[in-house]
Amino acid sequence: MAKSLFLLERRAKLKELIPSEYPFLFSEEFTGEAAAFFRACADHQLEGIVSKLGSSKYRSGRSKTWLKTKCFTEGSFVIIGTTRDRKTRAPLALLARVDAEGLAYAGSAFIVLSGVERDELSARLQTSKLERSPIPQLRFPDAQWVKPQLTARVRHLSGTKYLRHATVREIR
Image (cartoon, rainbow, N blue to C red; front, side, top):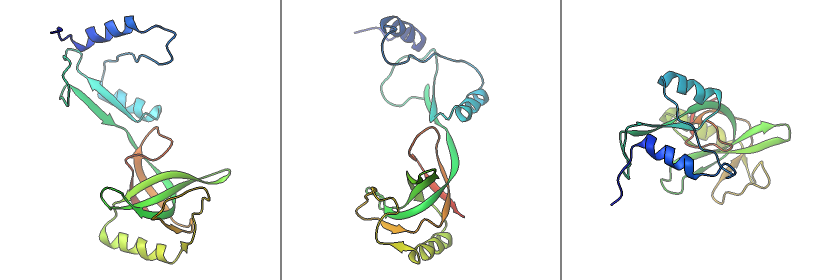
C-alpha cells in the first residue's frame, strides 16, 4: 500500500509532474487570514475558495481539514417567467439581465419569499402572462412566461455566467 503523504508534499510532487506547456494552471498555495481571502473572493468575482490544512493527509469523502467556502453576491434581474424545479417541484423564477441587445437569459432562482410576499408576486405575475418567452430562443416546456416588468433582488454565487445556487430575496 502506498504511503499517504501530507498535502504540501503531494502538491510539490504534482507540480514537478505537470509540464509547463499543459493548458491548465496549477494554483499556488496561500496562507493567511480568512478576511483577506473573502476580500479576494469579492474583488476577483470568485465562485468560492477551497481551504485545506497543509498537514492533512488524503482521505476520500468529506473532511474537516478540507473546507469549501462559497462566495455569494446579490444582483437585480428581470423576471421573465416561472416554473418548478424538476426534483423538488419548488417554485423558480426565470430571470434575465438587461444588456445592450435587450434581454439575456441569466438563469433561475428559487423563490424563497414569505407566504404573503409569494402570494403578492403570484397575483402580479397573473396579470402579465405571455404566450411565449420574452427571449425567443429560450425553451422551458412547463414555464409560465410573463412580461418583463418586475425586478427581483437575487442572492447567487459569484463568478459565473449563469445564476447558480440562486434565491429570490425581494421583488422591487
